[in-house]
Image (tube, rainbow, N blue to C red):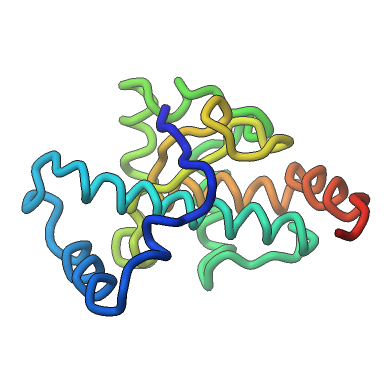
Length: 173
């Protein structure tokens, strides 16, 4: 599992306009161009964390059953439940995403969206237990389309309601 940065996005927030443009240009290059550059890995981690933070705040603020994550939600949901009808999504087992057998099953699902969903294969953080926040222990690295498949299903099937209802019951700060 990937460590989730804490304390906000200070690395990105401190960038000036020209530095931010350089980062954006660098991120548009093919992955093979980088090797294992720790600076690029940190930028990707921060971007993934920022995405996770925005999404978690969204499901805590808006009834998840009414959220639309993409223009293709209906297609993604139908394909996801068609390919993974029995997958337990309230508490994911990392083996259901990362084992060799799971990867063989996920690959065709993911490739269905190669031209349909922008950034379908970008790295994204996914909560294992949907009743909990993003923490190092509760987070796994997945592709964007896996995130969409699981989270659209969690929203439609009511599993993310617990986050919305918990946040709604908190006193206003």
